[in-house]
Image 1: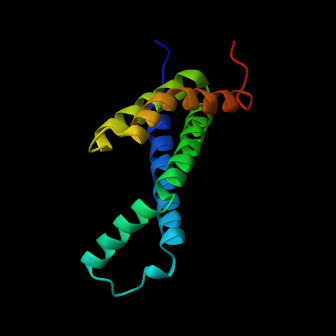
Image 2: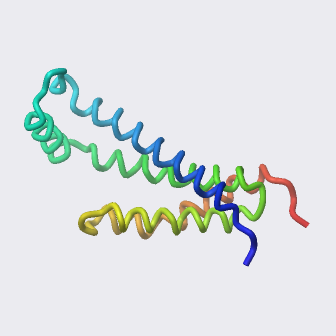
Image 3: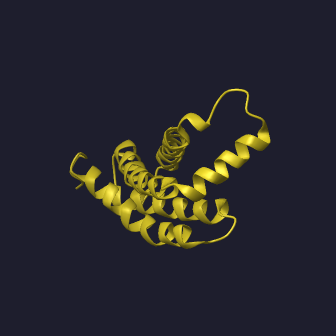
Length: 137
């Protein structure tokens, strides 16, 4: 088995998670609009979250940006490792699937879509990084 840089995988996955979190918060603020205000009680905030999730396209946009960060995370892992990009892309895909399964309360349609496309998108990110890496002999 070729040597995979676990440090590159960990750094890229952590970066991907942070990017996902920031994007989700920005999208939530965008979709919640002026309904969100300071001084909200926990009950009001939870009701707002449920309302936004059920009445807007927020979950679809979160999924779209999540797919994009999957490509970006694999790209970053391959660039950090500077070698065997496809193995690093595959490793990112496997870590992503494990995360999806562990983080999902129930495997609904979005979770299954994520599981199905994570490895191909990760390999695509690694492919994009490949042209920026030194030629292996």
